Image (cartoon, rainbow, N blue to C red; front, top):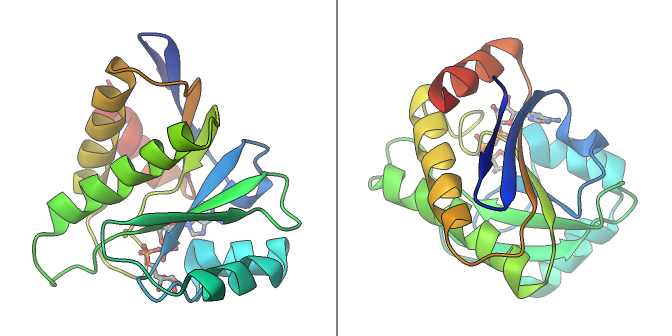
Length: 172
Ligand code: AR6
């Protein structure tokens, strides 16, 4: 099964390119300097245009575990939430990944947004293990959706079939 209902919301898994999604917001796997490099960030920069990086530059930076929001530029998604996950080896990684996920969800409610798509934060260039990521991100979303929220749909958009399989195993 690749979706579950949590209270009034839906948690869904899909495989593909997150920059193609038409959700209210997609999440960028950012760094704390908010400089969009490779991976998901690179795909967002190429498809969304320079405006997103310009907005990031105005904000400047945030802490590891934090999240900030910009418009979606030329993307189909209206907004990009830039969530800063941990670099493997820097310490306290699980807590930081949980906070990056949680702060993204809180921004959604602050802005009254209803649909969000996450990538597997930190599991590319930052080197965090995919199975630990699945466990932490899925549990954080589930807990959050059990509380008071306007969020209707949370998608985990996994780039590869093998990452999708890991998330699917964790969801079930
Ligand atoms: N759609 C969905 N998932 C993707 C896509 C895509 N288009 N492209 C890659 N992934 P990463 P990080 C997956 O490296 O590890 C950048 O330079 C990828 O397979 O994007 O948090 C930033 O600027 C992996 O599972 O992010 C930061 O400096 C996941 O997205 C740094 O990398 C995350 O991989 C962040 O590193």
